[in-house]
Image 1 (cartoon, one colour):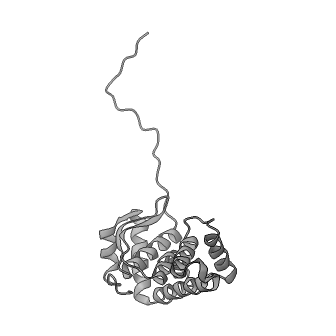
Image 2 (image 1 turned 30 degrees about the vertical axis):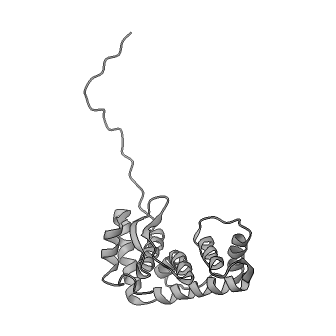
Image 3 (image 1 turned 60 degrees about the vertical axis):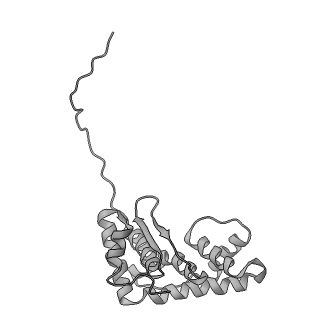
Length: 186
């Protein structure tokens, strides 16, 4: 028994289409990118493909409050979509800060915020000092993201992500720059 191979192209049985990205995810990642750009971070890429994320070439020398703000920017991007603004509740803040204090945290935005807050004050300073940095970063990004031009930058980048799913850092910066200058928030 032998096998014979033919140079014919196999018939196409069907195609798999990539699902449309969730609009909320696009706004989330777009806001991370816009706020990072405004703080002077250099973008490498933005993607809403799983796992959705923004990759930075460098984040420069961010102040701790700016690091918290960049991490909270994702949830704030979702708030910009709905125009319903808020900070974390006190119980959620305490939970994220306690996780980091106990070295039992992950890579979510809330854990990154808590890590930056604790890094700013040091564990001996206590949870209230860390909570102050955590809260200040949230308030900073909420204030910035409510500016009309910043929301426009988020919206424009989110629309591009809906269409393309992944955007190079150079392309993302070209979309953001007419609304938010690189490093202007620092």
